[in-house]
Image (cartoon, rainbow, N blue to C red):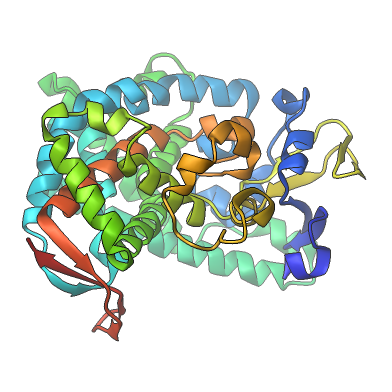
Length: 411
């Protein structure tokens, strides 16, 4: 709809009572992230309304400048490339076991792989506190979080339809949100106490010291950022994995070539995961081109006036990037932009593509995603485990829960 009305020009849209400028061209991104990018700020609750703020108060995603830097300094170490890499052998064993126990046959690809990344991140962040019983409790909390988010979204939608702007800003948290916040706090504080008393290795206990000893973040910010890392990315990871596996199922030549490459690199260990010259890497890149982590970026305010796409943009304008259009621009990707073709990354260098390729964010925001290194490694581990154990095929049918779009057979 935006493209039909505005073409390639920057376009103002309403998000509830607020306006946002949507940009969708690489030149627009470069104009936005000029020398002033360090002074960009974020609107309250990311324009998602007060109910969102009640559910994730003080989370890192909504912070900027010094507050963001302080929080990131504590959350980044356990989510860094080096920390995730050290855990790769354990992840590989866990994922291989999970795949061996996976039911073959027709599946809904989003549901089949929905909680794999979530489970591995739970294992990683809680470490010695992790076991099956503990994971099922975290899964219960995830479902409670989803109910709370749904209730908060419903409240937000109701306020957007209200004629009173005061009504928009006065809404309180839904009961489901209150329950989630209470139970999430109790769960994590109990784990932290057990970890300290038992001298367990537990990354979240280390991060929590920023609250209890250093006062670098509030307890609300700690709990909200942790829930973002674990819960807010479940649907994102399942969509990306679905894109990978359904396209491998539809492209037997690529699937067989990837299986052969994985077999040839069995002795390489984790080094295979880190290489960027492999078919495995191209499969992930191309799948995320068609299915980026976020379809639209979180809004950022311009502190200073800018010129974007030839238009004067006043200071204080909320700007959002349309990742879907950036990743499907025929001027960058050619007339077959809508086709899944991993080998296009043999023809197009990331340097040439620049801002026309979005995975986890755009510009400096691309480096801000705390989970990007974990996601890359876990996606690749799962793809390798599945492709070595299962043959993927296409199917089209309805199941008891959803649409069956993938069939899996043991090799």
